[in-house]
Image 1: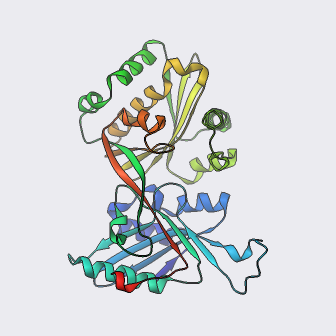
Image 2: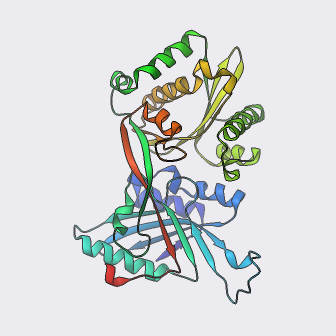
Image 3: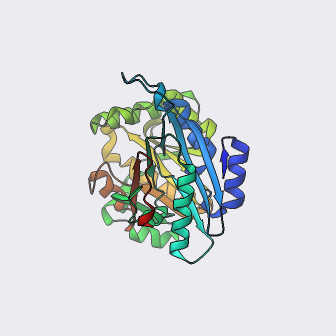
Length: 328
């Protein structure tokens, strides 16, 4: 078992041993971003035996240092997947399901430390949750569906699958003069515009405080990650803004905000269409739009208007580090 906390070594193992899973959520920089601003140290564990290869990423948080009016006698750790879709990567080396699960469970027994909890947001495309079905720990819990666009289709087919009303919205946005700006290295005014529009959107939706982000945090997306900012402009006024995260073959619709006063210009519809064409031109295979704030809400319906392709999103929890080998 190899515990990795060094960026170069981490990304080298990911790129060489788990090439097909080299997505942004598993890279060192993504966990570094969340650890820097919200606490925790990035850690990856690389394990290999005759049945599997495992790359397990998480943030390690020392909860014994948090003042909870409780006298901890030893260090206790909480492990978590940061916001998004990450968790473990498991590559079977055998077709025997029982052998794979046994190796996964054995890995967890070795990996276990003094932690009292671990929380996983399983990656939707790679379906790693399937290795934990039926287990008493990390037993996957379905949360909602997320929407994807298959970029290997030609643009006319992708367009045909967009609902008629949204195709109309895209045409109207173009006719009324809405323009989309692409920026790989946004400067302070563009970051500030995004924060303003995003915060307004969170306020309209009565979002939890944890979805409000600082200017420094958003700026670090572009310093640490491979990210893209799209701005919708009307007469040089930014009326909507979105951040996309770029993986190896997947582009993720990450954060977005818009000015409610310009809602009838449909800037978000046009931004997504322009993102589709840009991503396809640049060789991406999937555009991940994500899900809604809840099951089948208005945000989910908006995304699903662009594609009928959905995948389930699962989380996993392990409280107390207990592992039941009878459930293998």
